[in-house]
Amino acid sequence: MSVPVSESPLNSCHQALGARMIPFAGWNLPVEYSGLLSEHKATRQAAGLFDISHMGQIRATGQGALAALEVLLANDPAKLKDGEGHYTFLLNDHGGVIDDLFLYRLRPDDFLLVVNASRHAEDLALLSKQKSNVSFVGSPGSTAGMALQGPRAPAILSKLIQGDLSNPSIPQRNHISNYTIAGHLVLVGATGYTGEEGYEFFMERKAGPKIWGHILATGKSEGLLPCGLGARDSLRLEAGFPLNGQDLSPEITPVEAGLGFFVDLTRPRPFLGRTTVEAQKQSGAPRVCIGIQGAAGHPPPRHDYPVFRGDQRIGVITSGVPSPT
Image (cartoon, rainbow, N blue to C red; front, side):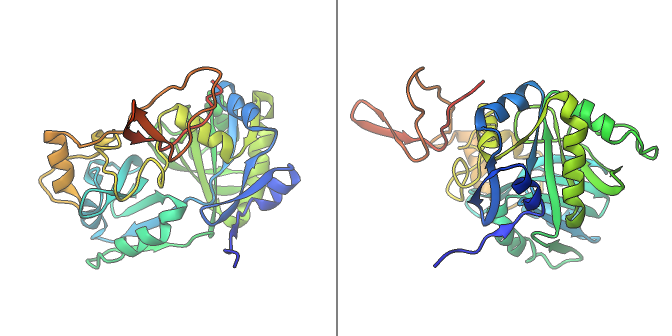
């Protein structure tokens, strides 16, 4: 029995560009257009545009929103000012990573959580257990999302917002703001998943195809290319960014993943998973995730390949791809 997949709001754009599509996290998404190598290099040298409509968005609103998020998230949301964001974790009782996500504070009692597609339903169910003056709302597929990444991304975004006199400046890193682009209201956050400068755009679903085409046309002179999941994976791994479900899981803590610095232990308030993570930060973790570089001329080790020292198995590969740059 086949598993149903959701279509991206940008599906017609991908078909028109001749993209090769694959199922990913319950969605039908482009894995490549012109080719993984050319898309990877374009993002490193100029700019790439990625469909991220599959990423879940959850709004937390109400007078109790901050208090609820302080109990649930590993990085302290109270430190965010309006319009700021940061990377954080939703942990289980044992400190394992249910999800890694990006949290924005839009207003004092209004937060946006950008979560992984494969964890959206689980995240929302856990968050919704908080009943004190807070509402959590997530509607998969109701919005379109895209990521503009690469050294030319700031120049392209500057062109896109030239006509928006109410907000003429591009957002600084880890900040978010509303802009009018191609006649539509777009929420733009300065972050990404490639190791390059970049921005993530969120808008109404029906506006997605028009804005996708407008960004590609505006960025053409800057070397912008549409890019798929293949390049996104090689770019993020070169940058050392984890993939939930491979490098992170409910059995792996942030400290074990080498990401303990995103867990804020300076606040007195307890949060899910704090006891385990705090103990590992003080005494060390029983295992750690590290980056390795394969020998030139050999195929890269892949996910779940065992690692040996002599005859002794000492670990496992969580992610592995060829490194174009």
